[in-house]
Length: 239
Image 1 (cartoon, rainbow, N blue to C red):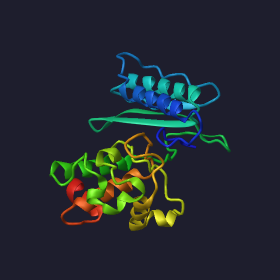
Image 2 (image 1 turned 135 degrees about the vertical axis):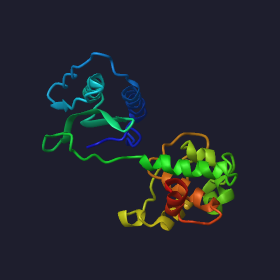
Image 3 (image 1 turned 45 degrees about the horizontal axis):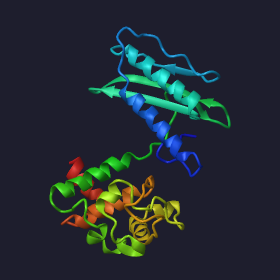
Image 4 (image 1 turned 60 degrees about the horizontal axis):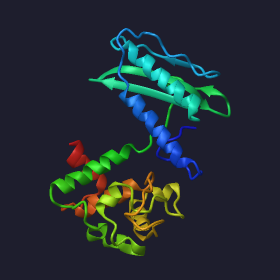
C-alpha cells in the first residue's frame, strides 16, 4: 500500500492525518544537509532500511533517512522512497519499510511506487497561461466558458474555486469504469452534470481525482484553436 496524503479516505480522523502528513512532507522538503554528518539514521524497529550515500552531500541522506523512519513509525505509513536531485545530480536516495503488507516484502531502491497528483501542476500551468493571455479570468464563473457546468447549482462556481478545490465535486462519477476514465468527453460531461456535495466556494473538498478533467476542459474551452488538452500541453508547454 502506498498512501497519497491528498487521497485519504473518509475516516473520521482523515483531516488530522492529512495535516500531520503534510507537515511531514514539508519537513522532508525543507531539511538542509548538516556539514560533517555522515551517519545514516537508524531504521525503525522491526523494519529494514538502507540509504545510498551521495558523495557530495553525505549528510542529506542521514537527515532524510531519519525523517522517513519517523514517518513510518509515527504516522501509519508502510513504505517510503525519497530521491532528491540538485542541479541534475542525485543528492538523496533513501528508502524504508514494507512494500507488500501481505507478504512482508521490503521496500528497496527498485520498488515501484504509483505517483499521485503529478498532473495537477501541468493542468494548472496550462490554465495560468490562458489567464496570462487574457483568455480566462480567475473570478469568472466556470459556466461562462463551459455552460454545461452550471447544472445542479454550479452556475456560480468560479475558476478560482476550481483551482482551490472548492467546487464540491471531488468524487468520480458513480458509473465510471477504467475504460470510461479514458473517455475524455464522457468524463467532462459527467462532471458537468454532477451535483456538488456542498455549495461551491463555501468549503474545501480536495479534488484528488477530478481536478485534471475540470481544469483541462476550462483550458480547452478557452483555447482559440479548440485543441484537445493533450495537444495544447504539447504545443504550448512542452515545445
